[in-house]
Length: 205
Ligand code: FE
Image (tube, rainbow, N blue to C red; front, side, top):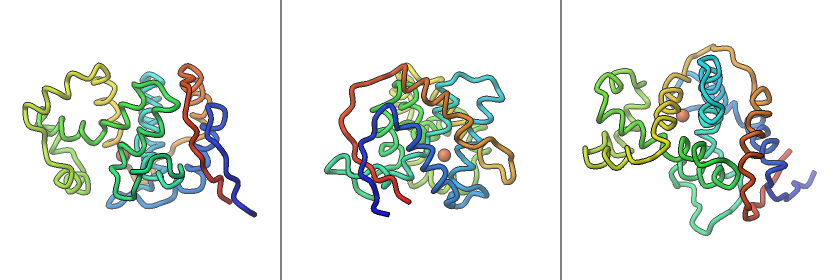
């Protein structure tokens, strides 16, 4: 069947995100004992179990969606494979979601660098793969960088999602699938209803 080229809208974005989980969630999360889909679902499930806000649950659910950025078609001239996944994800999410959700995605790598600089016990709990990527990502923040980072009004949510990111790496944890969270995701999209530019995507077989 010929792939259908379709524009993402606030009406179909949730289905599209769900289809990414269904089709590609089983892909490997390099160096971790969980797949990409399991990783994001674990973060969202832990957030829900702990009574966190819907913004934080959905932030955790979608924080790594940028790993699948090829799904979203070419939406800027500068969008290349080696683009940072946190920016790639946030650039898509910001068209549909409140800033707090987008910030949780955009800053989840920086949050690791921030926490390593400000909370010594945090670094000790990182997985081996996460320590390795920390070095590629620039290492712990300087105190100057940390001070800047603290200016973000969504700091608490960003840090909460970072902890969920680190926690969501448990082999064999049971979680619901994406569709359990879909109504909540849609609520946040509906609350936002940003006027959006057209992003063409292919719904693949
Ligand atoms: Fe992650």
